[in-house]
Image 1 (cartoon, helix red, strand yellow):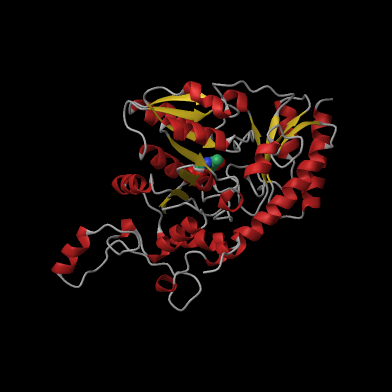
Image 2 (spheres, helix red, strand yellow):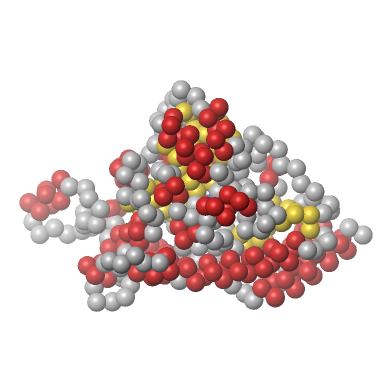
Length: 394
Ligand SMILES: Cc1ncc(COP(=O)(O)O)c(C=O)c1O
């Protein structure tokens, strides 16, 4: 096949005729039991454990295989993809597939909070020690590696504070020292950042966000290279982690329009981020595509685009001023998650989460998910919010 651009691939990937039949989308094949012709076939079926082969509902049907295949195709260097019922299940299974009791894990300090909770909770009880590291550490991570270090986890950009990590330098050290690298790539998606082609071993995605795109399904995926896929697959199967066919169908449907949605999320978010930067009440905007972002050069080097999620910091003020701003917004919902078609705003307090670095800011911070509404409506809404913030300060 001729080389396809990402926009073409996102439409076509995983649509194998044996899975779609004569229709466009691989239909929903719901199954627990798979029926065999006879006892011999049942016994034979037990012997092999291959992707894309009927066995039992927990190993999927063409509905899930088509989605997994599509995500694998979109990551050059990938061997395969496993699907999960949430992004957190994807993160935890990826880590469990690499670590064992007694191992040491290097975790980025700007990681999604439940990823930290996994490290400080389950992994700790299981005998895995975690060291949190500065997201800007780059090749300096070498100094934190211990004899029992086994894996480095990255999240770039951090999904609250948007530090962009120097992924190639970290991967270079990991390869030299024999460590496995895992990255949470939910923000950029494999459209705008392809970690495996930079040598990362596993790319985790909370498909709940941009892949699903409509705020109505929880899903996760881990796309792995040849060095890590077999263990990832074995661990997922042993833990019984999989994605339901109905949710896989909806995630695949979301994926087909992801490129065009991402373009709009990106354009509107950049537009609004630039506008926010010019408002007198705003101290800083944390968006990797802005020239003012401290790691803008890393973003420009490694990414081909940006998504709709970023944060900004108010100049002074307090919690009640921030609440006045957010509570009165007409076009932004107040709620967790992101990546859907609708805009969201939440207060964020990174200083309460970090341990390896300190978070110092000029005032309270707000994270925005910029949806597909007209950006001018969102700007007018935010301007009225900033006015409420000013009024609340008296
Ligand atoms: C960066 C990041 N990774 C992982 C997750 C977890 O995804 P899920 O909510 O599907 O478990 C989230 C959810 O907000 C996230 O923001």
